[in-house]
Amino acid sequence: MNDTFVPFDKLVDEIDKPKASGRPADKLVYKVSRQCYWVNVDFEKIVRFRCLGNGCRMTWAAPRNKTRVLKHAGQCENIAPALRREVNHCLGNASLSSKIEEDEVVIAQAQQSESSPRASTSLSSSKEIIFTKIGREQQARKISLTVVNLICGAGLAVSIAKYDEWKAFFQVVAPYYTPMSSSTIEDQHIPAEAARIRNIQIDELKKLYNLTVSFDGGSTRFPQSVELIHITTPEREVYFVEGHEASDKSHTAEFIRDIILDVSSNSMSFKYLFICFAGVGADWSRPFLAHFI
Ligand SMILES: [Zn+2]
Picture 1 (tube, rainbow, N blue to C red):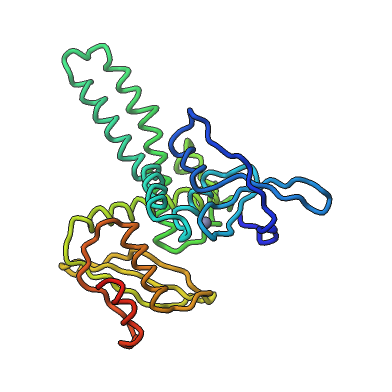
Picture 2 (cartoon, rainbow, N blue to C red):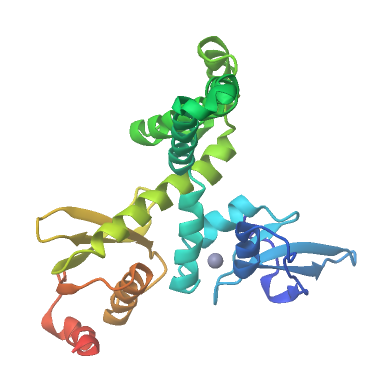
């Protein structure tokens, strides 16, 4: 959780290293965040964790929440594109969709061994795996994914998960299923699904040539200024690839250039042929184009 009252300039970094035996995702958290502290007026040592993105002032309270740290790091424009790509790869692999696919592989293997003539003794145990343990876990993940898709697709407030009526619904239709908390949906599953979709998009786009990258400004009702970046394929399929919140920044040629370079480097080896500007003059775009020529 971001705390605007943290005196960022008074934070002191501490030695902060992952355990050698830690999982890759845990080690990744240490690459993008660091433990630090500050001392308040009562001389109390307040432990915080800060984003390691260059110039980023995001901090979190202790204990370090891996889910929130990675959620932020996957979108933090101050983190190096390669590292951000690593975070999104990690998030995507941990998504419900990816886990469901892994479950299906395990179940298919169990079914295959069941049908093997040499596997007569494992028949009952395989069935037990399919219809109880993994089967039940996969069913729970499918329900969770359906909930995530429903909330995102219908534009529902994540806080719906806090309602007793919501929990009562699942007690009736799926008594074995434990409904997710709103924070789990918001901080873990939605960012993970978004990262997975983005990874798939990037993999597809990297196979193509003659891509067109376009960007246009917009605003939200808050209001915030947002730069939207799309990539269009030669078959005129449009992919939304980035949405940069840029309310406090001047939309200069250099600013736009950096966004596109960031998209390009984050996505790796896109083959652009066209770059579209919206509503700008030649004087504005000249220094931008000079960077590429
Ligand atoms: Zn950051």
